[in-house]
Image (cartoon, rainbow, N blue to C red; front, side, top):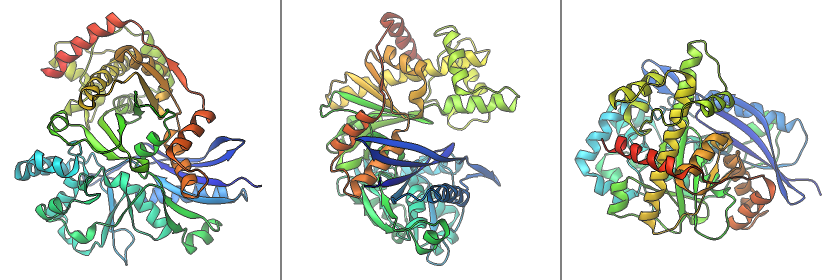
Length: 492
């Protein structure tokens, strides 16, 4: 019997990949077929995504796969959350989508909270308050782009929009819907109350589907153009973190947490239902939809964005380092020389990340990092200490005891950060798989196509297919002292 192949189109904030997956001899085999940059572009003072360029790059990957003459049964797209595209029946794209870090939401965010209150928004959505959320971008569109909205039929979040381009079926998958801060997880539909209060056009909001929904076959035009036949387009977990968490190789117990480590660090636990109460609101935690009706109770915190942007600054200055080099350099740097609060607003979208870090250190009476090795060490130690604080709070809010932390995604390749996470949290760290998002995407497709029957089966297959590295806590007193210093910085 021939292998059945599934195509994962995995879009990240820095790069996109077309991945090919199949199950052979009881294991998942995953291959990267095509990689391309996705970074935002600055146009007339705004940050935008070149979504059509991304779509064209995905088609290049599909043509490479078609040339192999294999049986592709399905494809699916996953992406980051909150951003969206506007379109209508006549025009497949009305404007390049804004990038979530665009500054247009800042005053709308503050004004929105003043007009309706944090408590009301949170009771409706259970979502962490961040100025990047879809709600505040749509409010900006109502105020700035009313002419554009007047001709838009619908909006679609990024992965769901690309699924629409592939299939012609406009649906938002629930994991991405839940990132918008306009989705009510209790009623499992859009929040009519928020839509009315902020005068958002009701027609913009498309139907919501569950993870693992078959949208329909690839369009005839794309089938012919890319030489692909009888390929179904699936809404898996369109949110990349949702797909990654589905691929965490954990058992049936509940003593584990996950960290999806990349541009963002998303750290949390899996719950059977949303947790929406005053303590969660005060802690600014979030309830996002996961595969199989689960809730991903988590905190979105800045992640390797700090290192990515620092690296870009050094590149502009003619200093080239890859991430492996930066990790090796950080390992040799002085421990705990300088610490930062990764959540400080100055790190959200600075012109020069190293200068922003140096500024924080000056303002808090610490020595400024002087070299890339010192900057990298400062970033990685600070992230690990924030993981500790976040896990301790999750334990308090949920009543669970967390004994191990599963780190998945690209950041799990940093053995130094993995060890720092184990040291800081005092918990065993299990690192991998690196390609958790693409793996989750592929295996939820397999579920949709009746080749797997449950989340447990997905996770069991992941555990059999990939090597997981283990890190044990070390130097407890040193990290405990650093945690106290870090807490002081955070509370200033």
